[in-house]
Length: 526
Ligand SMILES: O=P(O)(O)OC[C@H]1O[C@](O)(CO)[C@@H](O)[C@@H]1O
Image (cartoon, rainbow, N blue to C red; front, side):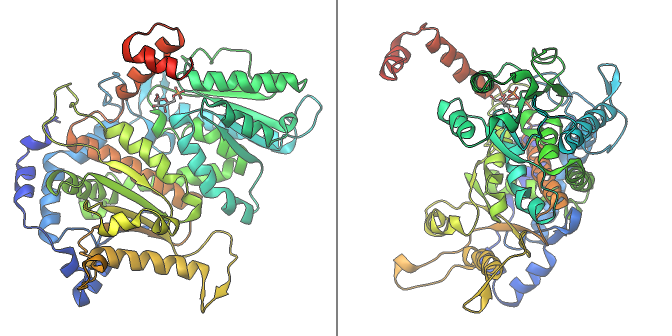
């Protein structure tokens, strides 16, 4: 029997609050530190490892976190989720994104079909379509091959797919699987669409309109913008556009598209990178085989999420350490710092994934919570971030837990030796140095140059960023966010908080405003 209880009612949480604080600076110094780096590491899928040596934990605290995981029934809740229970209570929906990449439990039937079979069928249809585009069997009206794919979508219909595309673009080029360049239009700012259209050859471009709901104003506006551009170029828009949407959306039955591929209401936008939402653009850009390899990496990592032992379940361990940092140590935010230029938009994706999921102040039953939930998430790739906001991370008044990601090898296989080391070595040296600098600090009589240390971090380490490791990385964070939502007893799968702004914007556009909104509308010249 699963029970959904608030975190502050759990005995394990009360004990956790009383646990002695670990001194990271001490723990990470000398032989102790060396031993921790070796032992506080949990294998992930595809050869990745989650290393938490520089987190504020010890064996006793890990036992306490295990008790919390058990009492909060995290494994059981995950099992209920992938077996098709209505976990998204706010919208009365199942949560099925794991089924887009594997079958962790029982068959889930809905809408008269087996859902795993449905997602695989869509993936196959996309693969067939992409193969035909690449083979020149689906072409523009002049019979010429499409060379560019442009995704039109926002939020989850943009951030995840865009981050994944950028993560694999160079890898695909190096591995001869690069098929088409991809561009993305998301912002309703007309300069976004205009800039993308300016830089491409529209006659050889295929546009993917991605909207689960089929009603998002920004996306529909950008669709019209693109259709106008196609018309102005003397082209038939319906021969250049495909749609990814849910079968119940207004777009599903439209004749305006060359083809339509489906996801459904059981996949939240921010969890949709492994569905047709990511599938269409990634299969067109890199080929369906690469997309499948990405799914396999995610599926393998998902399986680790079913482990009860937190030391064997990196996503659950990461989630619990995050809860400890947030609810016991009181840290307000978390920085995601990939030491990989290919992951330049990964933090932006995680912002939506984490904050839209767990930025909630009521529990699953709509009752106000007396404890804090999701932290502020932000980040930038290293080493760029080091020359930007790391000053605050090292010496600021807030302690901000850090999530590093690093790979031993680069994607392009091109490098240079300068001052006795390669660029890749410099990159890796920096991330190692940062972990110790944050943890141990450095005493200095000059207070301005003093580093207090005690700033916790973890790192996910891998050989190389490729389709499998990217899939595993994505799954890790999706499952981390899910487990944290379970612990906080919030519904991580709805997003009512985004509605009010949309409603008021519509009112402004309809000139139905008064008070401050009226004056602001006037100031903005609407
Ligand atoms: O795919 P859609 O339905 O256009 O929605 C786009 C995005 O808008 C949101 O609903 C928030 O406004 C996100 O959750 C979603 O990813």
